[in-house]
Amino acid sequence: MNKLIVGNLVHRPLRSVISAFAVAIEVIMILSVVAIFYGILNGSRTQQSGIGMDMIVRPGTAGALLNTSAAAADVRIADVLRKLPHVQVVSPVNIKLTTGASLENISGIDYASYNELKPFVFISGTPFQQPFDAIIDDLEATKGKGVKVGDTIKILNHDFTVRGIVEHGKGGRKYIPLATMDQLDGNPGKAAAFYLKTEDQPKFQEDVRNEILNTDGMQQYSVQTIQEYLSTLTPDHLPGFKPALNVIIGIATIIGFMVIFQSMYTAVMERTREIGILKSMGAGQFSIVSVVLRETMLLAIAGIFIGVVATYVLRWFLHAHINPTLSFQLTLEWDIKAVLIALAGALLGAFYPALKAARKDPIDALSYE
Image 1 (cartoon, helix red, strand yellow):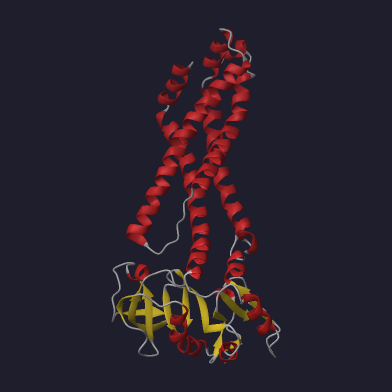
Image 2 (tube, one colour):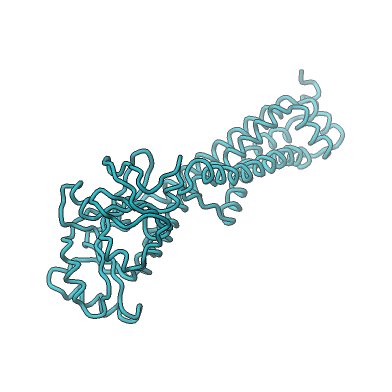
Protein backbone atom coordinates (compact mmCIF):
# COMPACT_ATOMS: atom_id res chain seq x y z
CA MET A 1 0.00 0.00 0.00
CA ASN A 2 2.90 2.36 0.78
CA LYS A 3 4.39 1.70 -2.66
CA LEU A 4 1.01 2.48 -4.19
CA ILE A 5 0.81 5.81 -2.34
CA VAL A 6 4.33 6.87 -3.39
CA GLY A 7 3.69 5.64 -6.93
CA ASN A 8 0.54 7.74 -7.20
CA LEU A 9 2.44 10.87 -6.18
CA VAL A 10 5.36 10.17 -8.53
CA HIS A 11 3.02 9.33 -11.42
CA ARG A 12 1.59 12.88 -11.32
CA PRO A 13 4.68 14.94 -10.44
CA LEU A 14 3.39 18.35 -11.51
CA ARG A 15 0.21 18.07 -9.46
CA SER A 16 2.18 16.79 -6.47
CA VAL A 17 4.69 19.64 -6.70
CA ILE A 18 1.95 22.29 -7.03
CA SER A 19 0.09 20.85 -4.01
CA ALA A 20 3.25 20.77 -1.89
CA PHE A 21 4.13 24.34 -2.86
CA ALA A 22 0.61 25.51 -2.04
CA VAL A 23 1.09 24.20 1.50
CA ALA A 24 4.54 25.80 1.56
CA ILE A 25 3.08 29.18 0.57
CA GLU A 26 0.48 28.80 3.32
CA VAL A 27 3.24 28.20 5.89
CA ILE A 28 5.36 31.08 4.58
CA MET A 29 2.39 33.47 4.74
CA ILE A 30 1.53 32.49 8.31
CA LEU A 31 5.09 32.61 9.64
CA SER A 32 6.06 35.79 7.79
CA VAL A 33 3.02 37.79 8.86
CA VAL A 34 3.32 36.63 12.46
CA ALA A 35 7.07 37.33 12.44
CA ILE A 36 6.54 40.90 11.23
CA PHE A 37 3.55 41.64 13.49
CA TYR A 38 5.16 40.31 16.65
CA GLY A 39 8.61 41.48 15.61
CA ILE A 40 7.50 45.09 15.38
CA LEU A 41 5.62 44.84 18.68
CA ASN A 42 8.38 43.09 20.63
CA GLY A 43 11.02 45.26 18.96
CA SER A 44 9.19 48.32 20.25
CA ARG A 45 9.18 46.85 23.77
CA THR A 46 12.92 46.17 23.58
CA GLN A 47 13.67 49.65 22.24
CA GLN A 48 11.59 51.32 24.96
CA SER A 49 13.33 49.27 27.65
CA GLY A 50 16.70 50.55 26.45
CA ILE A 51 15.93 54.26 26.84
CA GLY A 52 16.86 54.33 30.52
CA MET A 53 13.61 55.75 31.89
CA ASP A 54 11.61 54.08 34.63
CA MET A 55 8.45 56.23 34.41
CA ILE A 56 6.54 57.95 31.64
CA VAL A 57 4.13 60.90 31.91
CA ARG A 58 1.70 61.68 29.08
CA PRO A 59 -1.48 63.68 28.51
CA GLY A 60 -4.52 61.62 29.47
CA THR A 61 -5.65 61.26 25.85
CA ALA A 62 -2.39 59.61 24.77
CA GLY A 63 -2.59 56.23 23.07
CA ALA A 64 -0.77 53.05 24.02
CA LEU A 65 1.82 53.76 21.33
CA LEU A 66 3.55 57.10 21.54
CA ASN A 67 3.56 57.48 17.77
CA THR A 68 -0.24 57.60 17.83
CA SER A 69 -0.27 60.41 20.39
CA ALA A 70 -0.33 64.08 19.47
CA ALA A 71 2.27 66.40 21.00
CA ALA A 72 -0.26 68.05 23.28
CA ALA A 73 1.78 68.79 26.41
CA ASP A 74 3.65 72.02 27.06
CA VAL A 75 7.36 71.25 27.09
CA ARG A 76 7.73 73.52 30.18
CA ILE A 77 6.01 70.83 32.22
CA ALA A 78 9.44 69.19 32.29
CA ASP A 79 10.63 72.00 34.59
CA VAL A 80 7.71 71.34 36.94
CA LEU A 81 8.45 67.63 37.05
CA ARG A 82 12.16 68.18 37.74
CA LYS A 83 11.31 69.99 40.98
CA LEU A 84 9.39 67.04 42.43
CA PRO A 85 11.03 64.88 45.12
CA HIS A 86 12.91 61.76 43.97
CA VAL A 87 12.89 62.80 40.30
CA GLN A 88 16.42 62.78 38.89
CA VAL A 89 15.93 63.28 35.14
CA VAL A 90 13.03 64.51 33.01
CA SER A 91 13.25 64.34 29.23
CA PRO A 92 10.49 65.69 26.92
CA VAL A 93 10.05 63.72 23.70
CA ASN A 94 7.89 63.56 20.61
CA ILE A 95 7.56 60.44 18.46
CA LYS A 96 6.22 60.52 14.91
CA LEU A 97 5.30 57.59 12.71
CA THR A 98 6.16 58.16 9.06
CA THR A 99 4.85 56.16 6.12
CA GLY A 100 7.09 57.27 3.28
CA ALA A 101 9.44 54.80 1.61
CA SER A 102 9.10 52.64 4.73
CA LEU A 103 7.25 52.63 8.04
CA GLU A 104 9.46 54.13 10.75
CA ASN A 105 9.47 56.13 13.97
CA ILE A 106 11.26 59.45 14.24
CA SER A 107 12.20 60.55 17.75
CA GLY A 108 12.24 64.25 18.58
CA ILE A 109 14.41 64.59 21.68
CA ASP A 110 15.99 67.13 23.97
CA TYR A 111 19.50 65.70 23.61
CA ALA A 112 20.94 66.72 27.00
CA SER A 113 18.15 65.24 29.12
CA TYR A 114 17.60 62.21 26.86
CA ASN A 115 21.28 61.39 27.09
CA GLU A 116 21.08 61.71 30.89
CA LEU A 117 18.55 58.88 31.06
CA LYS A 118 21.15 56.55 29.60
CA PRO A 119 24.09 57.85 27.58
CA PHE A 120 24.26 57.26 23.84
CA VAL A 121 27.16 55.08 22.76
CA PHE A 122 28.63 56.84 19.72
CA ILE A 123 30.24 54.73 17.02
CA SER A 124 31.15 57.85 15.07
CA GLY A 125 30.27 61.52 15.00
CA THR A 126 28.92 63.84 17.68
CA PRO A 127 25.62 65.06 19.19
CA PHE A 128 23.45 67.63 17.39
CA GLN A 129 25.29 70.78 16.31
CA GLN A 130 22.60 72.43 14.18
CA PRO A 131 18.76 72.37 14.16
CA PHE A 132 18.67 70.13 11.09
CA ASP A 133 21.17 67.56 12.37
CA ALA A 134 20.17 63.94 12.93
CA ILE A 135 21.53 61.02 14.91
CA ILE A 136 20.89 57.49 13.62
CA ASP A 137 21.66 54.08 15.04
CA ASP A 138 24.11 51.57 13.56
CA LEU A 139 21.40 49.35 12.04
CA GLU A 140 19.82 52.30 10.27
CA ALA A 141 23.26 53.34 9.00
CA THR A 142 23.80 49.95 7.33
CA LYS A 143 20.54 50.00 5.35
CA GLY A 144 20.76 50.14 1.58
CA LYS A 145 24.07 51.55 0.41
CA GLY A 146 24.99 52.63 3.93
CA VAL A 147 25.04 56.05 5.57
CA LYS A 148 27.98 57.76 7.20
CA VAL A 149 28.50 60.90 9.26
CA GLY A 150 28.10 64.00 7.10
CA ASP A 151 25.64 62.42 4.66
CA THR A 152 22.27 64.03 4.00
CA ILE A 153 19.12 62.00 4.62
CA LYS A 154 15.44 62.78 4.22
CA ILE A 155 13.40 62.93 7.45
CA LEU A 156 9.82 64.26 7.60
CA ASN A 157 10.26 65.48 4.00
CA HIS A 158 13.25 67.67 4.94
CA ASP A 159 16.99 67.26 4.50
CA PHE A 160 18.96 66.45 7.65
CA THR A 161 22.71 66.04 8.08
CA VAL A 162 23.79 62.87 9.86
CA ARG A 163 25.83 64.20 12.77
CA GLY A 164 26.31 60.97 14.71
CA ILE A 165 25.88 57.20 14.53
CA VAL A 166 25.11 55.38 17.78
CA GLU A 167 24.57 51.82 18.98
CA HIS A 168 21.01 50.61 18.49
CA GLY A 169 18.57 49.88 21.31
CA LYS A 170 17.80 53.29 22.80
CA GLY A 171 14.21 53.97 21.82
CA GLY A 172 14.42 54.67 18.10
CA ARG A 173 16.58 54.57 15.00
CA LYS A 174 16.45 58.21 13.92
CA TYR A 175 16.66 61.16 16.31
CA ILE A 176 16.25 64.85 15.57
CA PRO A 177 16.05 67.86 17.92
CA LEU A 178 12.66 68.19 19.59
CA ALA A 179 12.51 71.90 18.75
CA THR A 180 13.04 71.11 15.07
CA MET A 181 10.27 68.50 15.04
CA ASP A 182 7.91 70.97 16.71
CA GLN A 183 8.88 73.61 14.16
CA LEU A 184 8.10 71.26 11.27
CA ASP A 185 4.77 70.40 12.91
CA GLY A 186 3.92 74.06 13.37
CA ASN A 187 3.43 73.22 17.04
CA PRO A 188 6.31 74.88 18.93
CA GLY A 189 7.05 74.13 22.56
CA LYS A 190 5.12 70.84 22.69
CA ALA A 191 5.89 67.25 23.65
CA ALA A 192 4.02 63.96 23.44
CA ALA A 193 5.49 62.54 26.65
CA PHE A 194 8.04 63.01 29.40
CA TYR A 195 10.49 60.26 30.32
CA LEU A 196 11.46 60.19 33.99
CA LYS A 197 14.34 58.62 35.84
CA THR A 198 13.65 58.37 39.55
CA GLU A 199 15.76 57.88 42.61
CA ASP A 200 16.33 54.29 43.84
CA GLN A 201 13.83 52.86 41.39
CA PRO A 202 11.32 51.38 41.99
CA LYS A 203 11.35 52.49 45.63
CA PHE A 204 9.87 55.96 45.12
CA GLN A 205 7.82 55.43 41.95
CA GLU A 206 4.48 55.42 43.74
CA ASP A 207 5.43 58.58 45.66
CA VAL A 208 6.40 60.28 42.40
CA ARG A 209 3.13 59.24 40.77
CA ASN A 210 1.12 60.73 43.65
CA GLU A 211 3.16 63.95 43.58
CA ILE A 212 2.52 64.38 39.85
CA LEU A 213 -1.21 63.72 40.07
CA ASN A 214 -1.51 66.14 43.01
CA THR A 215 0.24 68.92 41.08
CA ASP A 216 -2.08 71.64 39.76
CA GLY A 217 -2.98 71.02 36.11
CA MET A 218 -1.56 67.47 36.09
CA GLN A 219 -4.63 65.58 37.31
CA GLN A 220 -5.61 64.48 33.80
CA TYR A 221 -2.15 63.13 32.91
CA SER A 222 -1.30 59.45 32.62
CA VAL A 223 1.58 58.39 34.86
CA GLN A 224 2.98 54.89 34.34
CA THR A 225 6.03 52.94 35.36
CA ILE A 226 8.04 51.42 32.54
CA GLN A 227 6.67 47.99 33.49
CA GLU A 228 3.09 49.27 33.28
CA TYR A 229 3.75 50.94 29.95
CA LEU A 230 5.38 47.87 28.42
CA SER A 231 2.45 45.75 29.58
CA THR A 232 0.23 47.80 27.23
CA LEU A 233 2.37 46.86 24.23
CA THR A 234 0.69 43.49 23.81
CA PRO A 235 -1.73 42.16 21.19
CA ASP A 236 -4.61 42.36 23.67
CA HIS A 237 -4.09 46.10 24.13
CA LEU A 238 -3.69 46.99 20.44
CA PRO A 239 -7.01 47.37 18.57
CA GLY A 240 -7.12 45.38 15.37
CA PHE A 241 -3.90 43.42 16.00
CA LYS A 242 -5.42 40.00 16.57
CA PRO A 243 -8.30 40.38 14.07
CA ALA A 244 -5.86 41.38 11.32
CA LEU A 245 -3.57 38.48 12.18
CA ASN A 246 -6.44 36.00 12.27
CA VAL A 247 -7.79 37.20 8.91
CA ILE A 248 -4.44 36.71 7.18
CA ILE A 249 -3.91 33.30 8.79
CA GLY A 250 -7.45 32.35 7.76
CA ILE A 251 -6.83 33.37 4.14
CA ALA A 252 -3.59 31.37 4.06
CA THR A 253 -5.35 28.32 5.48
CA ILE A 254 -8.17 28.56 2.94
CA ILE A 255 -5.63 28.71 0.10
CA GLY A 256 -3.97 25.52 1.32
CA PHE A 257 -7.34 23.84 1.89
CA MET A 258 -8.68 24.65 -1.58
CA VAL A 259 -5.56 23.53 -3.45
CA ILE A 260 -5.40 20.22 -1.58
CA PHE A 261 -9.15 19.70 -2.01
CA GLN A 262 -8.97 20.26 -5.75
CA SER A 263 -5.86 18.12 -6.13
CA MET A 264 -7.18 15.15 -4.18
CA TYR A 265 -10.70 15.37 -5.64
CA THR A 266 -9.28 15.29 -9.17
CA ALA A 267 -6.97 12.43 -8.21
CA VAL A 268 -9.89 10.40 -6.86
CA MET A 269 -11.92 10.96 -10.04
CA GLU A 270 -8.98 9.90 -12.21
CA ARG A 271 -8.37 6.76 -10.17
CA THR A 272 -11.93 5.43 -10.12
CA ARG A 273 -10.99 2.10 -11.71
CA GLU A 274 -8.01 1.72 -9.40
CA ILE A 275 -10.27 2.25 -6.38
CA GLY A 276 -12.68 -0.34 -7.80
CA ILE A 277 -9.86 -2.89 -8.09
CA LEU A 278 -8.78 -2.25 -4.50
CA LYS A 279 -12.33 -2.67 -3.19
CA SER A 280 -12.89 -5.84 -5.25
CA MET A 281 -9.74 -7.26 -3.63
CA GLY A 282 -11.22 -6.69 -0.19
CA ALA A 283 -10.06 -3.18 0.73
CA GLY A 284 -12.56 -1.61 3.10
CA GLN A 285 -13.70 2.00 3.34
CA PHE A 286 -11.15 2.72 6.05
CA SER A 287 -8.30 1.48 3.83
CA ILE A 288 -9.41 3.67 0.93
CA VAL A 289 -9.73 6.74 3.17
CA SER A 290 -6.34 5.91 4.64
CA VAL A 291 -4.69 5.85 1.21
CA VAL A 292 -6.01 9.30 0.27
CA LEU A 293 -5.17 10.86 3.64
CA ARG A 294 -1.68 9.34 3.71
CA GLU A 295 -0.99 10.77 0.27
CA THR A 296 -2.14 14.13 1.56
CA MET A 297 0.05 13.78 4.65
CA LEU A 298 3.13 13.22 2.48
CA LEU A 299 2.30 16.27 0.35
CA ALA A 300 1.63 18.38 3.45
CA ILE A 301 4.83 17.30 5.20
CA ALA A 302 6.88 18.12 2.10
CA GLY A 303 5.14 21.50 1.76
CA ILE A 304 5.56 22.30 5.46
CA PHE A 305 9.28 21.49 5.35
CA ILE A 306 9.77 23.68 2.28
CA GLY A 307 7.71 26.48 3.85
CA VAL A 308 9.56 26.55 7.17
CA VAL A 309 13.00 26.44 5.54
CA ALA A 310 12.00 29.09 2.99
CA THR A 311 10.77 31.42 5.76
CA TYR A 312 14.09 31.24 7.62
CA VAL A 313 15.94 31.84 4.34
CA LEU A 314 13.63 34.80 3.72
CA ARG A 315 14.48 36.26 7.13
CA TRP A 316 18.20 35.95 6.41
CA PHE A 317 17.82 37.52 2.98
CA LEU A 318 15.77 40.46 4.28
CA HIS A 319 18.24 41.19 7.07
CA ALA A 320 21.33 40.67 4.91
CA HIS A 321 20.28 42.38 1.68
CA ILE A 322 17.07 44.39 2.07
CA ASN A 323 16.54 45.90 5.50
CA PRO A 324 18.68 45.01 8.55
CA THR A 325 16.35 47.02 10.80
CA LEU A 326 13.28 44.96 9.89
CA SER A 327 11.77 43.25 12.93
CA PHE A 328 11.20 39.70 11.68
CA GLN A 329 10.78 37.48 14.75
CA LEU A 330 10.40 33.75 14.25
CA THR A 331 9.64 31.61 17.29
CA LEU A 332 9.36 27.88 17.94
CA GLU A 333 5.82 28.39 19.24
CA TRP A 334 4.59 29.83 15.95
CA ASP A 335 6.63 27.32 13.93
CA ILE A 336 4.62 24.58 15.64
CA LYS A 337 1.33 26.45 15.23
CA ALA A 338 1.97 27.00 11.51
CA VAL A 339 2.79 23.31 11.05
CA LEU A 340 -0.40 22.23 12.82
CA ILE A 341 -2.58 24.74 10.94
CA ALA A 342 -1.17 23.70 7.56
CA LEU A 343 -1.49 20.00 8.40
CA ALA A 344 -5.07 20.38 9.64
CA GLY A 345 -6.05 22.41 6.57
CA ALA A 346 -4.55 19.85 4.22
CA LEU A 347 -6.26 16.90 5.91
CA LEU A 348 -9.60 18.71 5.95
CA GLY A 349 -9.18 19.47 2.25
CA ALA A 350 -8.61 15.78 1.53
CA PHE A 351 -11.34 14.43 3.80
CA TYR A 352 -14.31 14.79 1.40
CA PRO A 353 -12.42 13.32 -1.61
CA ALA A 354 -11.37 10.43 0.65
CA LEU A 355 -14.95 9.76 1.71
CA LYS A 356 -16.11 9.96 -1.91
CA ALA A 357 -13.50 7.41 -2.88
CA ALA A 358 -14.45 5.09 -0.02
CA ARG A 359 -18.15 5.15 -0.92
CA LYS A 360 -17.69 4.19 -4.56
CA ASP A 361 -19.45 1.02 -5.60
CA PRO A 362 -16.77 -1.47 -6.78
CA ILE A 363 -18.89 -2.67 -9.73
CA ASP A 364 -19.52 0.89 -10.95
CA ALA A 365 -15.88 1.72 -10.41
CA LEU A 366 -14.64 -1.28 -12.41
CA SER A 367 -16.94 -0.41 -15.31
CA TYR A 368 -15.93 3.29 -15.22
CA GLU A 369 -14.40 4.55 -18.49
